[in-house]
Length: 396
Image (cartoon, rainbow, N blue to C red; front, side):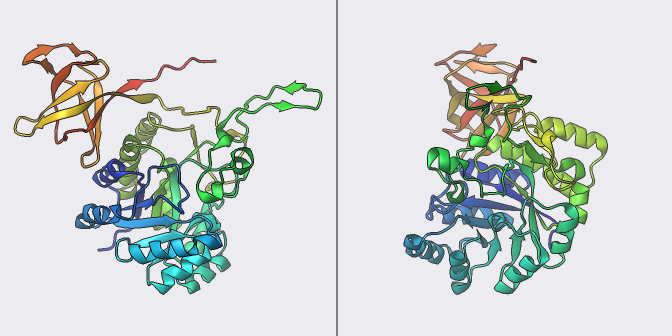
């Protein structure tokens, strides 16, 4: 049976891939080293596609490759080589440039129209459908009523959670002007997240209430996801290829539950509190419920997360029969610490330190350079170990 909704996860590396699948993703999207709108993510190589396919196909996970930047004439040969090599290795290509669309059609590779195309009306949706597109990732600047109209024409995918651009997505030139690093080439350095001050020609400075005047809050649709379902959205996309495996695990796990059933108000509150623990710039409903206002601008430059992860060591041995890992510490670890383990094959494992042993003797804590043993499920040699700490914020 076809699933009613697709939960689409961002993947920037193998730990994120395995984590996304374990957390409940129905599909994943990722980029190569070139022609992707997240060029600053680690991304993959063409050689990695066989391994990705091997991981995804046994669990029927769809694989979407992003080739969604603008393309220049001197790059046509290169993009053609890529598309010829990826045939039968991905389920669809996400693109916006007509050169890529033409090549996908030539080599019979399904293609989706990227949000970079800013599709925002029914006539444009009809155009791309007639061109052969299987799906459109709609412009972020649409409300639910507008989305519902377009969803009757073609399958639509919409962002459900993650960072938002202050400009029409991908069209901002601030990064290009300041740093010669173009958003249209996937190289945005996000200068919008910084603090800005207003000065006149006499260097008089205006004090503004929130100097993050270009920094949008993150999108979070969890409180009104039932309305999203009724709008006819087929695929719910999570933004975050530059995030980490923990971010993917928390967001995918929570939105999976929300897509499987209608959440109670209490469940929504509890899940929102969980989402606030990981990277966020506070939450907004975007354009879905109406045009954003000044209240949808963030007041933080980096993250409003209430927790952070701290690297403490790496697994040097794992004994599966007794489910014990030995860890070489680079930082202190104590009984009671909340930890996560991240690895290329492991994905992400959540745990809590119940007992620590050094040379078969129980201890309350291990220190830097110690090799300690703790109980852990299904981890592997070279996996990274992190403690999760609460962030203390000073109220201004």
